[in-house]
Image 1 (cartoon, one colour):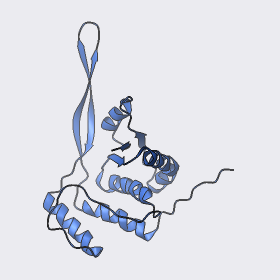
Image 2 (image 1 turned 45 degrees about the vertical axis):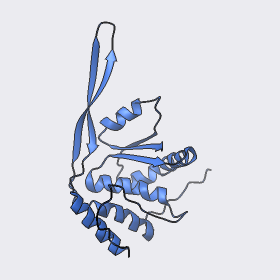
Image 3 (image 1 turned 180 degrees about the vertical axis):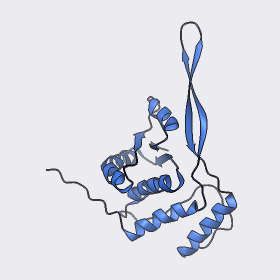
Image 4 (image 1 turned 90 degrees about the vertical axis):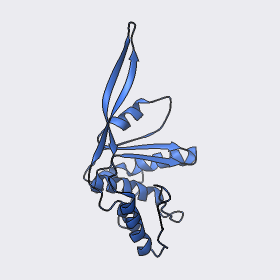
Length: 182
């Protein structure tokens, strides 16, 4: 009998990190962006185009709203409030061994539940970490489905030689997680 990894869903410091990220988007309505995904297919006589409807995350919050949300989170955690948004990049810092991968996976599902976001790209610095993240997603899949009412999701490692998963990433309306290296 193989040992099964037990994920603890109620660790306070992990819940605080998830809430901090989701708190950035307080006031965001559930909405999505639609766009056209075109694939040229060449036959013997002429060019043909195959099109699909792409579905993306749509952020409706203004920079001022994001900054106010960020300041609230910073103050709650004893940090100096930022005077402005330097970019749309935010950082959550956690100690080694505290479950960062689990936290951002849970955050993905919370952001889907609360805001309807479906597209997530996890960018890591090395091939070894990429493989580790992918394995963690595989291992946690049933746990996440249990926590989030069976929410369907797909995940894959980006490979420029295999673009069909990228097309599915763009066109699917369910949670999509792409893992890639810098």
